[in-house]
Figure (cartoon, helix red, strand yellow):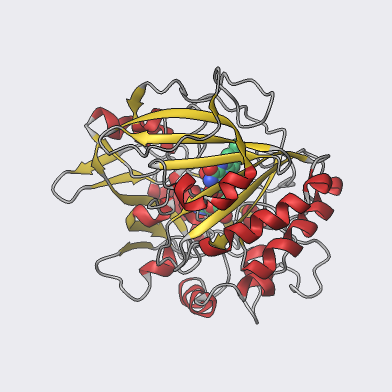
Length: 431
Ligand SMILES: Cc1cc2nc3c(=O)[nH]c(=O)nc-3n(C[C@H](O)[C@H](O)[C@H](O)COP(=O)(O)OP(=O)(O)OC[C@H]3O[C@@H](n4cnc5c(N)ncnc54)[C@H](O)[C@@H]3O)c2cc1C
């Protein structure tokens, strides 16, 4: 078995699929090392383990709405696409979704997954409560209101604190979104008028190959005033983010209003193939560094061209989650969809990082990076607090793996090699 993209193979590790929380508790308690799987859409070693896996897709799906509290408590292994459809049927919504709805709530929140929008935080920022199974099979309940000291360290937690079984999310009344796409937008204009471009709609994504121009995808809430910004020209038909690729899996771009969950993602629920023909990297930068990042990436365009399918720029509002790549920082996120050719892509990732790292880039936990654990750790003010929390919740490192251990200065989980001597970096395929 492997991850969705096939760049990480899980080897002989078994996958247990419990159909109750009690069965999950027994499995976890009886394991030396174990890691939860979502839909396996991560590209990095965040998914790896030298132990076994548990997948929660057989736990009974539930979306329990508390209208008075404006929350929904959902089974953590459910996909956002299913959660969103259930919320919409009852007249509710989430503030944000990622480009792809068919990823699990637990997996997306564990890695700081995000969509776009100047005022849109990462998906994990909507989490106000968690239930997880700890190393002894114990059930732990955490809430933003009660666990002031630790909650912010427990949501974007890379699977390292336990297996999350239930997540309580903030919700709001349902709303409609109209999506339209403008093409042939000069990169000079996006770079020079960054705030105006990204402020033009509820959620804005800019797609470019860093040579030539850009396509700007505008997702406008119909209950909010629209910005009057003339950008490029309207697309003359539906587009895929990747130039020339089939637009059929994409959400409606006609400008017709529709339910929030059918417009905020770029890709429609149920349409992405089970195996991905791509690799991805992404970096969160302080928003003010965006123009400098544009200059650096445009200069790299000839190097990027042979391996880059498309780049995407999004904005993410800062949050207070210790390991969120948008921690305490309104961010501009620079994403790269690469061809699936690890040896050719890795040197280009390193070149991109030479440009973006000095600007304060934090790599997406679920995507490929050439940065080492200590380099990544140095970019998180609360990394030591997270290590302390992990030591308390999982003293024997049952939920650890090489990537998580690299973040810890002086500990490693059973069976992992020392971060300093490990031959296989977390972004390589042969764990
Ligand atoms: C086509 C595509 C589009 C994408 N679009 C976006 C995007 O728009 N924005 C973005 O930010 N990212 C995006 N990503 C990355 C993706 O959101 C992350 O990889 C996310 O983690 C995927 O969720 P998953 O359910 O597949 O989790 P997995 O990849 O299966 O797992 C991710 C991590 O979560 C942990 N985990 C999973 N379930 C649990 C649980 N129950 N308890 C504890 N830990 C758990 C795993 O152990 C692992 O560490 C995209 C990826 C792909 C392939």
